Structures are given as C-alpha cells and as structure tokens.
Image 1 (cartoon, helix red, strand yellow):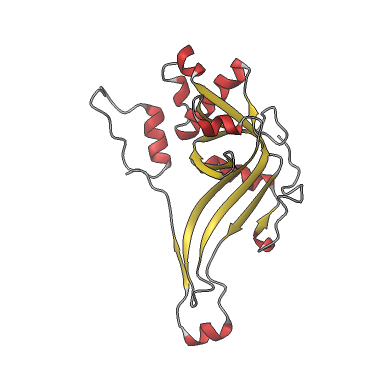
Image 2: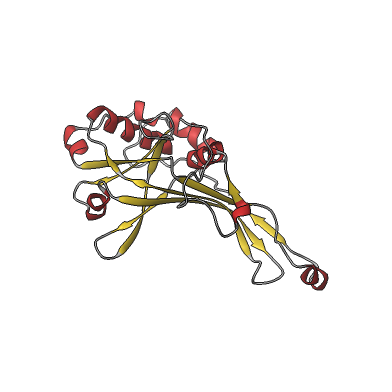
Length: 226
C-alpha cells in the first residue's frame, strides 16, 4: 500500500471542477470499501464498451498502489478483450440529490473514482483464489470462509484480472447548491436530499434451514436492516 497522493499523471489530473478533487488515497480506499459495483470501460474491437462488474481490493496487493480485482467468464468477449489492455474503471456512489434554484446548479452529491491502467491477467493459482475470496468477502465480509471452496472447473471457467490502483483520481461533491445571490433572493428554498443504501432483512431460499448465518446477519445489520 502507498500513501502517495492521487492523480500522479496527466491522464488522471483533474481539469473541470478540480476544486472537488481529493488527493488523499485514504479517501479513495474508503470509497472502494463502501461501493459494490465498478464499471469497466474498454475498446471492444472498434467500438467502446462499458460493463458493470463486482470487484474487490487488496491494498497490500502486488501492484503499485494496491490491486483492484475484477472477474468474468473465460468465454466472455469483454473479459478477453481486457487481457493486457488499457482499461478505465469507474466507481460512483450517489449520496444525495441537490435541489438548486436553477437548472444549471441542480446536481447530485457523489463520490466518484476513475482508475486507469493495464489489466493484468492473474495466472498464479494462489493469487486467483485469493482474489475470488476477496470478491465474496467484499459483498459479505467473512463469507468465503463459511461456504464451499471453488471447484477446479469453476476456477478454470473464471478469468480474474488485476488493475493497479496507482493511476487514479477521486472527485467528491457534498452539501447544498452553489446558487447565485440573485437566485437566492428570488427563491426562498434550496438544499439537498440525502440518499442512503439500506438493506432489508435477509430472506432465505426454499432450501434454507436454521437461523440466518452470523456473517449474513452482521452484513445486513451493518447496512441498516431492520
């Protein structure tokens, strides 16, 4: 893990609304710990393609700045196009709706990261299994240790790619609108609507027996289940 500041290259240095940029890697790490979905952008062979995917992060991973892992079927065209290619991964959490006094200032509160780099194929078996466990635990911490281990067939059917966290930027918007003084004088109210992710109580399937496992129950409680 590195504590070097974000945006170390021209490609990730912010231009528009640079004042909303963050330079502390710890803030990026907090977003990656909270978010559940990443979008991977790549050249799919003559046309751009952006796809959602589960992910996980190892801050002590082998790549510079730590490692972001994502995966897909070995038969998927997009995952094979990503092998050794330059990709762009974006991760966004929406924290609120900004109700401004003008359309121009209407916005959202958000935390948004952009990570650029060459996607490395994870060939070594131990690292691949470690990455798959991290992805399970990113959704429900501790879950990988309580469920069946992946079979050889499942591992063979899964391609794991790794992306260094080195070349990254983070932009954050918080609070209310940035309204003009004239708009504030003409319209008495402006503000924002906070948004939160809240889980429901765990729902077992038809084959479930006994109480909800501790790892699932704790995760639901962490996400605010009632």
